[in-house]
Amino acid sequence: MITTYVAVTLIALILMSAYNVGILSENLYQEETMRLYAKANIISQSMTSAWNVADEREMIWRGQDVTGRILGGTNIRGVITDNSYTVLYDTNSDTDMVGKVFMRDVLKRALDGEQAQSEFEADTGKTLTVSVPIEVNDEIVGGVYLAENVSSTADTINAIKASLILFSVLLLFIIVIISIGTSYIITRPITHFISVAKAISKGDFSKRARVDGMREMAEMGQALNFMCDQLNQLEEKRKNFVSDVSHELKTPMAGIKLLCDSLVQAENPDMDTIREFLNDMSEEIDRLTRIINRLLTLSRLDAGQDLAMSDVDISALCNGVVESVRKLAAEKAIELQYIPPEMPTILVCADYDKIYECVYNIVVNAINYTPEYGHVEARVSFGDGKCIIAVEDDGPGIPDEEKQKIFERFYRLDDSRARDTGGTGLGLAITKEAVLLHNGTIEVTDSQTGGSIFTITLPVPELGKE
Ligand SMILES: Nc1ncnc2c1ncn2[C@@H]1O[C@H](COP(=O)(O)OP(=O)(O)O)[C@@H](O)[C@H]1O
Ligand SMILES: [Mg+2]
Image 1: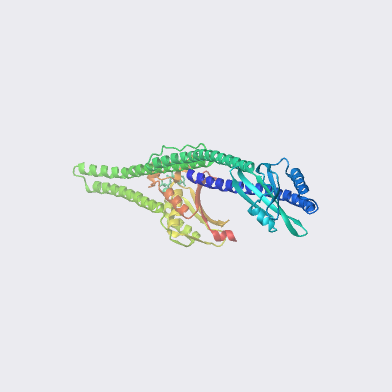
Image 2: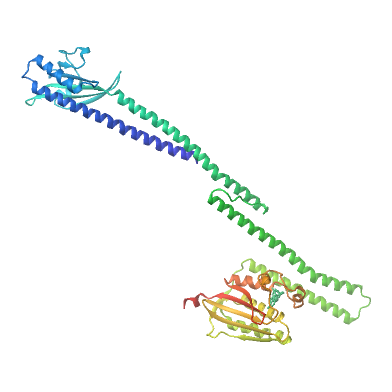
C-alpha cells in the first residue's frame, strides 16, 4: 500500500512540476522576446526616418541617441547595420565593431525581410536575440540586432525548480509517514481480529475482540464478539442437550434394570408377579421408545429437512386431531370442543404431517395438564394474511417467567407430574421447531379462567392480498 501511494504521488509530482516549470519558462522567455521585438521596432523606425536625410556621422549620432533612450539601463546589446552587414553603431563600445562586418543568422533573416529571433547558450548564460529590418520606401537598407542575456531569468527558473524538488521531497516524506501510520492503524486491529477468530475456531469462546479505535473497526469487533457469544450459547445448549438426553434415557434404563434384578433375585416368583414385572418393563421400554422417536423427529427438524408441502384444510386437520383424542379427554371427564372458522375454510400451503403433530401436541398437553372436569377448546380462524390455531384450557396455566422456557428441550414445569402423563418434555420443542420451519409463530398466553392459550400462527400470503 505504501509503495503504491509513494509511486502515485511521485509520478503526479514529477508530471506537475515538469509541466509547470515548462509553462513558466516558456512564458517568461516569450514575454522577454516580445519586449525585445518592441524595442527593436522602435529603433528601426527611428533609423528609417533618419536614413538618407542625414549624413553618416549624424546617423551614428541618431543611433546612439535612440539606443541610449530605448536600451539605457538594461543589459541589452544593440547593433545597427546597413544591408551589407556593416556595423553603423554598436552599444557595446568595447568590441569596437563600427565599420566592421557583423554576421549573425538572425540578422541575415532580418535583412531578407523577416522579423527573426533566436536563442543560444553563451559562456555568460542563456541569450535571446531578435533582429528586424530597417526599411526605407519598401527597400531594406539595414537591420537592428538586439541581444539580451537572460541568465537572471534562467536563474529564477532554476530556483523555482530547486524549490519544487525540495517541496516534492518533503511532501513525499510526509506521505510516507502518513501511509505508514494509516496502514499501521488499519492492519493492527485486523491482525488482532484474526488472532481472536483463530482462538474462537479452536473453541476458545472466552476470547473477545477489542472494540475501540476507528468506528468501522469497533463495529467489526462488536460483530465478532456477538458471533462469539452466539457460538458460546450454542455450544452451551449442545452440551446441556447431550447431558439432558443421557439423563432422560438413564431413568427408564434404571427402571428396567431394577425390575430385572428384582426378578432375578426373587425366589420362585409366581406367574402373576413375573407378568406384572414384565408389564412394568414394557412400559419403561415404551417410554424409551417415545423419547428416542421424539429425539429423531427433533434431529430431522434440526437438519432442516424439506417440508412436504401441500394444500391443507387446517379446519379439517384440527377437527381430526380433536376427534382422535376424544377418548383421552373422556377418561378425565374433560369437555373437549372444536370451533371451526366463521368463514369458509381456506387451504393453507403446509406440511400436513408436521402441522398435525403440532396441533396434536398442544391439544394433548391441554388435556394432560387440565384437571378432571375441565374444558379444552380448539379454534381455527383466518385473517390478516394468517391462519390462527388456538387451543385454550382452564388448567393451572403457566407462570410468565416459564412461558418461554417450556419451548426448550426437556423442559417441564413440574417434572414428576409431567412424567406421570408420559411426557418427554420434547413435545413443545418439536412443535416450535416445525412451526418456525413454516415461517409461523407459536406463543402462549393466559386465558380468562387462568388456564393457557397456545396460539400457532401460519402465514397465508394469499389472504393478505385480498
Ligand atoms: N396446557 C398446558 N398447561 C399447563 N402446562 C403446560 C401446558 N402445556 C405444556 N405445559 C408445560 O410445559 C411443559 C412442556 O411441554 P411439552 O414440551 O409438551 O412436554 P411434555 O412431554 O412434558 O408434555 C410440560 O411439561 C408442562 O409442564
Ligand atoms: Mg407434551
